[in-house]
Length: 344
Ligand SMILES: O=C(O)C(=O)C[C@H](O)[C@H](O)COP(=O)(O)O
Image 1 (cartoon, rainbow, N blue to C red):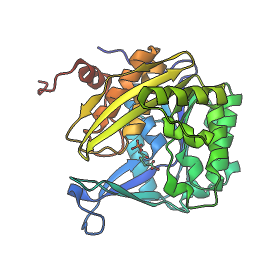
Image 2 (image 1 turned 180 degrees about the horizontal axis):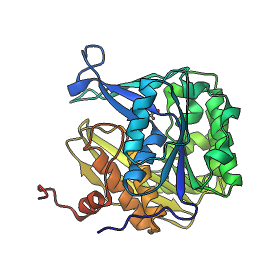
Image 3 (image 1 turned 90 degrees about the horizontal axis):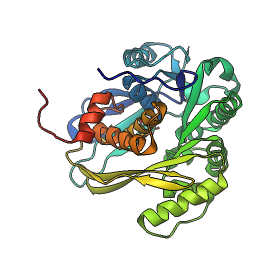
């Protein structure tokens, strides 16, 4: 039996962010012609909460869902995956939606957001009672999507990070830059993202995210450019201990090559590149990487093992429809051991 890992220190990991309903055109149809839509639950932070819960960690989703059947359905979904839903507030309002047309052949995937004025986006920032919501939690996971939703969520994300910091919690922050969201309101992404990264111990982002944060380009090639960007980020954000990233080469809509990496102050751990053919659904791949890597760190493994568990979980996620990576340790172990014939 594989022992279930326990998150270290104060037991729970809190994920703060919007829960979304994903409506996808089935069988790779386009949204403009689909006659039915498939339903999945998602949201960047929620995906991390589910993946970690499936891996045996205690995760708490801090969010808000509308009263009524859509909110009830989401609660059932997250509870069913073992996520603590006690810190999800309920109130009248609308649920954030996004629509997906899954790419095929030479047509890339496309996302249409319909989440303006959702209950979560309109929550007054002062309505979140951080000490109560984070009670018993030792880690907070946030992403750059929450502050992109509007001035209220931006203030809430900052307040969450400050409260977690002053409670002695560790913080992971996934850059998740979404240009379409930031462009929908009069925002200054750099200032907000800089403060959030300044509170983080672990930052998920690549050299492009760091270039955006620091407002400067990195001109080298491959690993040299990644290291240069990481060193610039460590210099600008002294609280950061690790920067984790993936490098993705899109061979074809259905076939990507993915490598993963952790940079620390004194060096980097880089994985081999894995070819991922026959992709079923790549949405949530970044969240799966974050969850897999957090899983390794929370279980007390070293960076080499943690980055490989992140790589394994992101690659596995591409085989599964929906946002969440609902795999167990045995799936990660089997992936890392290789071998793709039927297991029986
Ligand atoms: O865009 C948003 O606001 C969402 O939260 C929708 C998606 O669930 C995640 O963004 C997945 O992101 P990746 O893991 O990078 O594919």
